[in-house]
Image 1 (tube, rainbow, N blue to C red):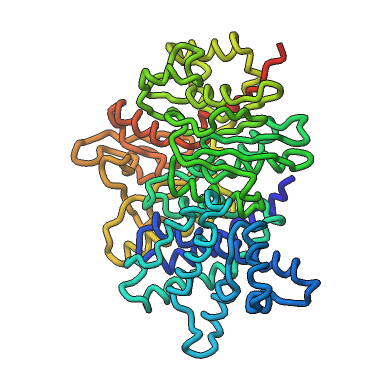
Image 2 (cartoon, rainbow, N blue to C red):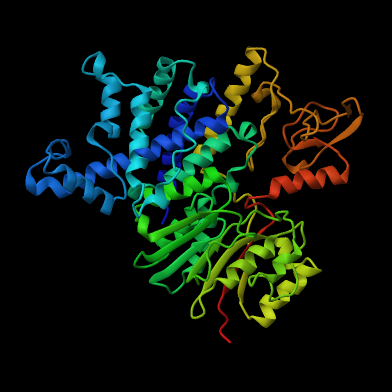
Length: 525
């Protein structure tokens, strides 16, 4: 059960600390880059603390610290072997996160002072320790996005050292007690970072992370009556938050093996980080990189539980050759190129366990009513396969980030806008958060460039083209046409084709007002 007050407090605290870190980095590089340094360092800290706790436990009967054991020629090979077998990697004592922090805040002379090259060497040694081991697939490339020699961090080693040192110290102050957290810390951190700088990233957080409410609902529906699950999968796993949510809803918490697939390289790394940060042994999960629709990485694996929040109405190539794929051949039709929703559903139905396979998936309402090939596929799943148990309509605005974090994000967006105006910088209009409407004066009067959904005053004729302006959401708009200006709820009327394209971009990868929860299990006959 979520403690809502604690949930909001934790989310707000996390947001504030991430904002403080981002402030140190954002003058140097685009937000799509610096989030990788923040998340990579959070993950490195977790792996370091896990090493420290494990070594403290196994060495306590010997009366040795990890540093002492590693310095002993007789103990070192043993503790290295234990670390590889049980953790999957090795972090030397001098590379532990606490040791890096100490070098920054309390160096023992100039020779002991932190250098960014120390951090780079520590990361490379960690990944190198997994090479040729059973854990290699779980760790390979995890830190690829954290390029510590990137000139955007600074033109000199000293400049890069100064910046990364600030990040490390601030991340050392974040509470990473995952067992006490009311949400997925790493996934939520990613969502907050994208939310704070959505205009720079050009993304919506829902593309990477399913919010807590819908995620819990899907996991609850998929695990009804289950104590444990042999296999759990998510074919568009994002940060793996829904896979982890399923485990929480099993009465014993036991999952034999997790499977996931993700097409975005950065998010693919995030998913593997998340599994490891939540204590899932590297031998008990396989997260694959690739396009689920074109390349089925699961092979012949059949799943006990599958959950999914696929990108809504995704456009795909619709290659007729896919009809030879056993996942899609049953219905004899492929989903239309403009709506791949049923392709994801068919993929999941194909991988359902024959005895007690369950699927819970979030989809747009359109899948229930559209005709053509989708109607054929729908009838095939419902009538021929008897796989449908229930359809549940969901409320709008479910893609919002935690309330405390959203308020913080909106406040910080306004601060950035005012700062830009003071600096005389011509900036783009920041997009609104779901459910958030703010007056332009609170954002420094910034406006979005033409062609990306222009915001203008409600009244009169606007722009060079003389477009008539009206509120899209009159109930939320406190202004009368011709009298003052409104916020993001007022947009110029644009040709229908343009509006449809804009709305399509808004829908993709989100749990929005048009979403539906669809539960599918093996039919009862």
